[in-house]
Length: 600
Image 1 (cartoon, one colour):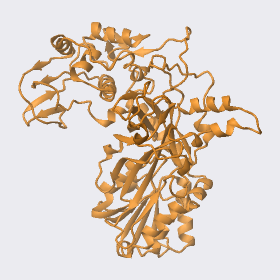
Image 2 (cartoon, one colour; image 1 turned 90 degrees about the vertical axis):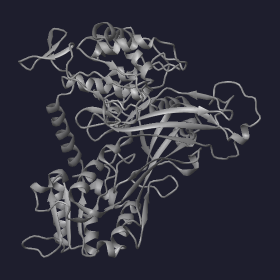
Image 3 (cartoon, helix red, strand yellow; image 1 turned 180 degrees about the horizontal axis):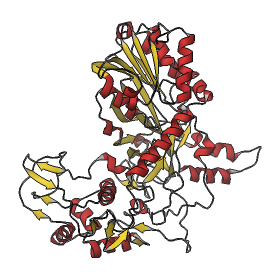
Image 4 (cartoon, one colour; image 1 turned 60 degrees about the vertical axis):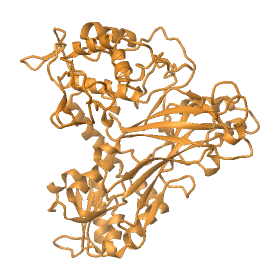
């Protein structure tokens, strides 16, 4: 379910928000726009009037560089971040999680130490090794996008004992050099090793204490907490929810969704052409809008249909439509459809319904890039709270795909010939800007330059709520074409949802938002590279002795390896997407580009 996204709003930025991003991956001058998107691309520029502001991990001191901050943490708090990264062999994502974990613990007035009974760390699952820590704890945290500056691929040698000594300064660290097995986190805050050995989280820390007056004492000084205020967070969530549900009061949005034949026909067929599933069933429709899915369910012979709608206006509209179509149910009407004005998480306050009493749970919850709007969490809550064991959820699968796109999908062709005049300089500037922000647009099949690749699958009947956040990899292979070498300007993401034979036995169907099928109101989500990557099939490159950087015209990549992370953003109902791109040559050589982070 998606509100209309105006492209001009997606691309809204200020000219002075230039990004200083050098070719060697220096994020030192990273800045965030109003949407929290890390800016990338462009030439590196010096700005003497602006200094980066890096907040200490443990106290309220600010620093002008990562080096200064890390040295402060080492000397003042006994924590050597870079030493810990090397010792524990933490990659970018694990380090990203570690920073967010530390900030969350400090904000909750906790500090931590490890009691590790292990010879090495290969199989240990540390407390921060969860997908939720891919979400920035603070949207303004410049450190998250700068801590990996100036790193080299080669591992430097370091003193293990010295690093362990630094770690021990952070808390009471004891190491028992014994073999270890698999580890898992328990609810008590301990990491169990082989069922008996622990990595224990402690709450004592000299750098951060709680006074009797509940004020923060930071290095002996009173300080106000800067992040992690739960009440502020709740107010923010309520405000976002009000705006979100209010946006669906516009009839234009509902006309757009109802006019989307791919979308509406898929749901109609799933509900009307599977009589053994719907006949006599209790159906719940989460986020009913106009009530179209509920009307289908009533027409299919459901004995009770509970239409849940959080927008006050649309709940009234759905009620009126149900009455007009003689399916409404109340003391005065003899139908089967009842409308509850409520969030599904608070449904019991609005109607009488028993837990695990629903036979079929249906919802059109999908947003741009599948997960924008974060409505899936509400659907999973409804599944766990209201659906009978073995009950049906429609759709029951969701799959995300990715492919590379070429010049034809960009704005460049238009600006290269405007009434016979060359305005390509404008096109190039726009293209640089799109490397900062995700674009929602319809991409044509002819403009794809790679084969599609599977990115992530979700089984909606069994998945856990925290699996909404994920990290996945994919490899893109170039398509065959007359032009042996082609430029890949970025990647396009789309999704399919399945009404599979698991529940829809008579008539399974698929709702696809693919570039290979008729367009939908979801379109596709476009992520533009900071620079195009030259690609050619391996068969074309075999036997060639090419020199130069992988991905250039002189040495095209034979494939592109992607690592993509999608996580719910610090801003409620938004998502953060990180994109790591590596070009591979036909001989196994690699070239990696700086990580890009997008906010949708």
